[in-house]
Image (cartoon, rainbow, N blue to C red; front, side, top):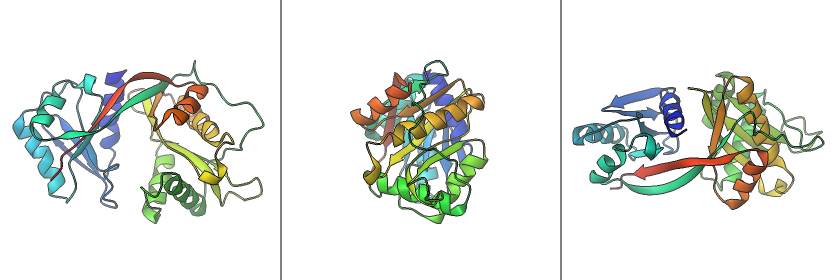
Length: 254
């Protein structure tokens, strides 16, 4: 599974508006934002980078005024981590990833939160704002953020949300989740967010199951995600996600 996850990471970064490939690394950049969570790199599975390769990768980030940063499954490229650490990269985070298959997916019972696909600019903006609020403002809401969500949905991915209330007309968003289009048989589910006022109502489970099911309907054999705490992990496990591997986040300071 590590190789599938890593191959997906490569394919997903190649979808960015700007792509740089250097010595076994792929870096994806979006000029509409300086967010390190959107502008980052990953090694090709089995990459064996040398000092010049790492230097070229760092230069691609420096030229854009961005902090060099990578996300990857280390077991899929075991020689990448030592090369990066020799160049001064340090650990930002280590996350366990969970995987769901069509056989393990468990859809919440009927009668729970109503899940919708955003259609209008106002709905995409509401999803973007809800994700920003749920994540403590780490991702400020913006027209560019809403546009990225629309491109994700229209490009073969999935964005789903729960409106504030049944009569809200879809304008308000209690919570949401999204997923990039599948690649190499898998897809990464992310952005699972519930606004504080709506937590404890099954919103996260509902949108997670809906997005996961949408990916299976589009041919994905697996869907994977990372979790931020034991509370969210329990939600994902109830929907059918199971631990499968580790992802490493490295960053170069200075």
